[in-house]
Length: 361
Image 1 (spheres, rainbow, N blue to C red):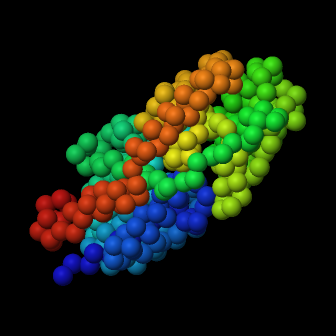
Image 2: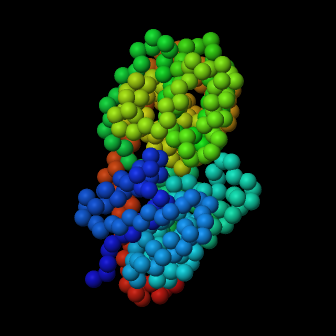
Image 3: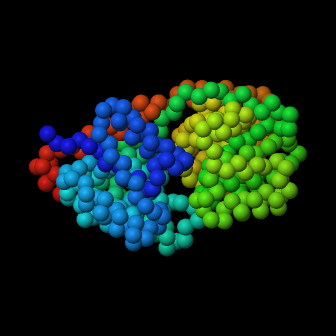
């Protein structure tokens, strides 16, 4: 009887509060709820540009997995595991969960982007299957020379959520943005856009870690001060549990204006709460948020973003229509049970005979 244990390679602590780590946590929990054996291996970083101790740790961890073991590697861990993948490419059965291609991250130099592109392409060549969250990420993975037949789209699931009740509007509607403070998330574009709407009442709450990109939080704070918006913009830091839920409950609008997103789980969370959404038409976000739920704008276009906000802030009827559109979109989103089932089925083919292994090699 072949060993059906699934070994998941996670880039660091799986409890980190980002969509990608949330996806991993729900996958692990969902598989274990079905009685599957899952072992999570947390690899040291930094990620994705790793050092020799991290690579050595990945080599040792991979070497300890029994022959023929099934290994699902989070895309952010591909660089740290690249050498181990090459060494064990015939001994283990590899799959990857790619949230979005790493070389598309904002703020990379051309040399860094090229290095990540080559690492991802070469590592993915040894994967028996690749799981992606969206059509957009699937296209990115195909660009990394992975055949479409080896890719499964498993949209992240959603949970039931209480509808947002709103802020009450005494000091203007609250616009909520939940995103780590990194260049890819487009906070500076958001500040620029809202600075053009001083004549409208609004408040902006930025929820997200300031520790993932040195200097980005300071750049955002400078932009807020430079536009004279200190009384309207609150940087809340990273929140979870009841504190985050309180922000969701008191919001009137949601926004996420990333330059690229593999999917946009937080936008799906907003739709489940009936929040009108103004997001960038970037990567997988357009697959999550329909125009009827608010607006989609080109990434990096502050003028278009300001116009989208102006339309909803100035017209209560348009805001109410977007609210109804968000409710309808939220009702169509998949559950985590659906998502886990898709991934489980895709990975089930990795338990194969030795003859099939030799054919693959």
